[in-house]
Image 1 (cartoon, rainbow, N blue to C red):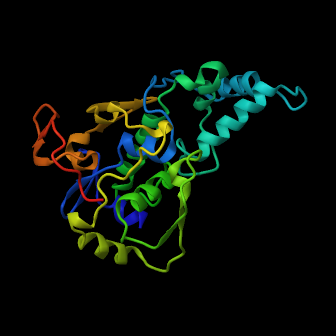
Image 2: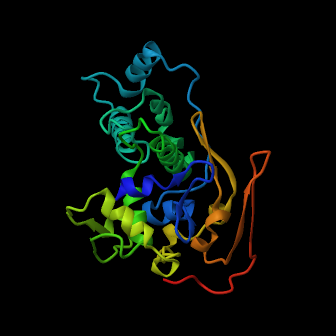
Length: 269
């Protein structure tokens, strides 16, 4: 299923091109599914994190075996957490040494734009997946998978548990084992119509995941030295707006599109 969707990714528009138009994983989806902030500072690591710098940072920030420092244990846990989730690479077992510097000051690590970070990493691996030589995809695939569950109710088999307000919404979904192959999901995607989509899931069930206007930001988002276009106006139906005709890519690399400044009707749920 993931592979079938990834085949429809277009890096120029940061969106999946489907029979009825475009859709994408938005900042609103990230805050709604993961309950992490979509505002904050973009992270820029040191320019040259070589082996010597990585070793020095590990000794300073993670400590040694018998020191018993709680701050070092906290950093090790947080590094493991982000390395397995929003900042996962293709290995799913290794974490880049540059991310050590995210937790250099534990009191201020909440300042980072964690939501955009998850999107930049996933968008970049989706771009990489469109290359012929690519055989694997990285990024937070649980975010990708639960986004599909939320918006495409008939695309696959899955179970939905009652949502616990204190937990991220993504935990209400459970995948069901299936023997279907990529060709099966390609055919399912080809047959989709706009009436088959849940355009705007009801994420606003508690204060933690209230809608944030930053989700409608359009431009580029960055994490480390990677920048990707974020163009929600191309998928404005996901915010409850009416989608007008999309423009093409301009000579200056910009994107031309328009959307209504009112909520005429809510998209089908």
